[in-house]
Length: 638
Ligand SMILES: Nc1nc2c(c(=O)[nH]1)N[C@H]1C(S)=C(S)[C@@H](COP(=O)(O)OP(=O)(O)OC[C@H]3O[C@@H](n4cnc5c(N)ncnc54)[C@H](O)[C@@H]3O)O[C@H]1N2
Ligand code: MOO
Image 1: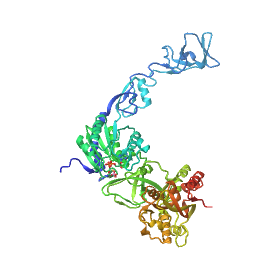
Image 2 (image 1 turned 90 degrees about the horizontal axis):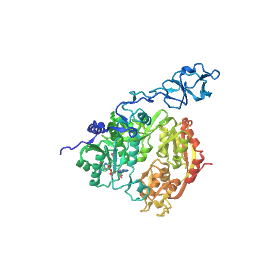
Image 3 (image 1 turned 60 degrees about the vertical axis):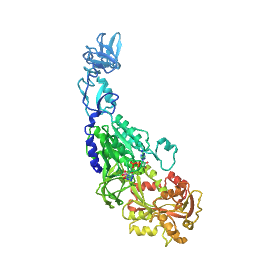
Image 4 (image 1 turned 45 degrees about the horizontal axis):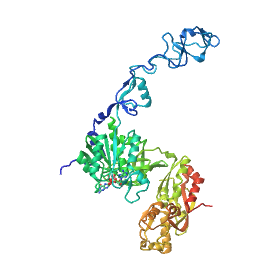
């Protein structure tokens, strides 16, 4: 079968095809606009004034037109006296009479018996705005490539210009599609809480991105997955707009019709780009206009927007440049940081991968790590410090692999502490008080054991642990001794917290002990090995003589208290072991089991780090303490 269009090409190939198809398209945007309507547009020619501004010699003050020579030697003590006929009253802006060459400010004069008494001597042209002082006729007052600004609009009028040649704004349309997609209003009114509905959030991202780039985009109504309707909108869109973006319908689902509509109405340029997210991106020429399909997931939409849509908009503006440079521009990249991966990352062979990164410096090592990589995860994009593009050749990126992070926000690395260890909602609440004290806090929930191990490898500034030693019944001592290998680590006991069994509200399955977890109809949600809560759970099971293999869901692992509690909340599990605050946050029932100390561990060398100092001060913060007390399940040490 003959290949109709290129498929699964690289991003550079896709951009090559797209930019070639619309080469010279920028000419279409050249037009003449009335000066106010052209605000923000780019001038396509130099503009010359057609008049002098002012077009006559004008008084710059309220006072008297006169000849400067008549004021020679005048001072308050020795004023000059001018008879009538040698001076004339002037308002500011009035035209100077031919015979006069200066204007005396009214404050520097008085009148006595028809004479003007002059207390100041003037030089010729004093207080006079000469002809063309502002702008001379024929002078270039704005140049090709410059934007039309408020100052230029008023200048143009004064200089006698009513219309200017500009590149008019690109008219773009985004068409969201999908039977499951619901409008902002319906979403917020919770009209539809049925599972399977998704808020139409992509148009907000697209419109905000366009605005940030200085462009505009119209948004069509949400279309159902009906090819006939999409066809109508694409036809209308390409008739009225310069660029049409179609949301979703790019993959292989039964309701994905975008490709057939593109094929019917025009010429498909490519389908599928070897990158992730954004893989099913495609583009077509329909009625001579570019039509780009943005795969539906938010991050997939974002990636295609940055890597194909923005560069195309720049090309429309008559600009060109290296694709990666344009992508960085679209992201608003401020800086590129050479970092080392803190955690290994498995990438797909032959596919360029976009990662949302966090960065931190520990000692002299600049680390970065990828946040959740799912294409549907918006939080990771909002939370990230920057973007890394792993090349297609990257496969298993081990810890310490060099990765360039394109920083999309400024981060003061000297004041950011990196926390790794046991997760706790109260610790997450410390970020704001720490920031109010001028420092910053980045965290990774890796469990108590993971945190101490990271600390011993020099991969964080502080860890948190609540690790029970089964032999001695003591917390943390043995583990800190083992991991610190003789380094001096300070310990800060933050609070005691209550651990217990978290069950659904009203405890419908009557769970009251660990033995109850073995019942057939009970699904448990566990924590990862190395988490303090997991160590505690395994210890308690042993103590109670409950075999782990009897518990359904024992192998189902969550990495935070909130994640585990959320599985109970949504009914995916009936119980988990966790802290009271997690149960309270979701209105779940809680059966208290034991109380444990929660300690922060900081190598002494970091005690004076600005971030650690802010953290220690924040532990005394009254507002934070009140919030922790409100959460419940915490007790302050005496
Ligand atoms: N069998 C295959 N399935 C999928 C493939 C594939 O190659 N073979 N590719 C996957 C990839 S990768 C992506 S990306 C998605 C692309 O999906 P579509 O472009 O077809 O979009 P939908 O399936 O309609 O939606 C995906 C997802 O995004 C949500 N969405 C859609 N529009 C919006 C919007 N305006 N605002 C917010 N969210 C939106 C939608 O509800 C879905 O959750 O396909 C994979 N599948
Ligand atoms: O390639 Mo898709 O855009 O990962 O989710």
